[in-house]
Amino acid sequence: MENRSIPDSQLVLNPDGSVYHLKLLPAQLADTVILVGDPNRVGKVSSFFDVIEHKVSNREIVTHTGFYRGKRLSVISTGMGTDNIDIVINELDALVNVDLKTRQIKPVHHSLNLIRLGTSGALQPDIPVGESFVAGKYALGIDGLLHFYARSGEVMRQDMTEAFVRHMQWDSKLPAPYVVEASPRLLELLAYDCRQGLTATAPGFYGPQGRVLRLPVADAEMNHKMESFSFEGIRITNFEMESSALYGMSRMLGHEALTICLIIANRVTEKFSGNYQPFMEKLIRQTLDRLCM
Image (cartoon, rainbow, N blue to C red; front, side, top):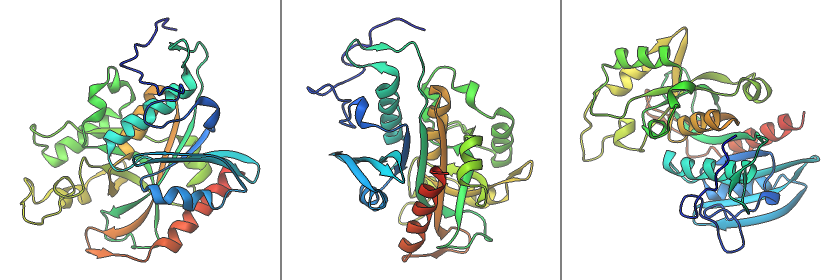
């Protein structure tokens, strides 16, 4: 294990010793963490808890830690995008794998369970809107974040990545794609009866996902080509903005990660569901119950 002290400017702490953005101390974090994008969804998840022992918020990051049926859980909002995931996952890892007083990496590694519950748009016409739960068996990143880290290639599924680049005739001006696998254990525990596939992660909501308002997109056929991609029977099921960074960083740091999304739009049929909250509550309750099994 590397024995070095992490400088103040690289691991920023608040005056009370908590990590900078999350404003959490190690004792305030559970080993199993539910991640949501929307800060308002944190209270929705924790409303099912039997006890809430700690609450804190900073910008778009809200954390509630408590107990559900005897199991200690944290629920944290990340906001939107892989840039926010970069912040949240690094600081979660620091809470359990760095001694915040000495700023040295702990000799014994501690692994977290990180489960993202989000909303998403389907990229296959046969996935219904408003009632479908899709688990990302793999995440496909077109955001580029993982390439900023050394040895990121070790966690990537290179054959699937290369097949995607060939199929798409990927423009070299765009970030290099990458594919990372979810935690098989969490997939089996939490999503055994969900649709499974390849969840695509974009670095934006509009152009990077093929949406056109007043600005035309560089590749008007991008979504159609993604819809037709298949590798060993695995299709690109949906588009969102966080999972590739979550999977990649978790694997590099030694944590277990999985994303399950409620489909609220279908990019092929152009349908959208504005009344999806009952289905999101079902997904939350289902996930909480299965975490306690």
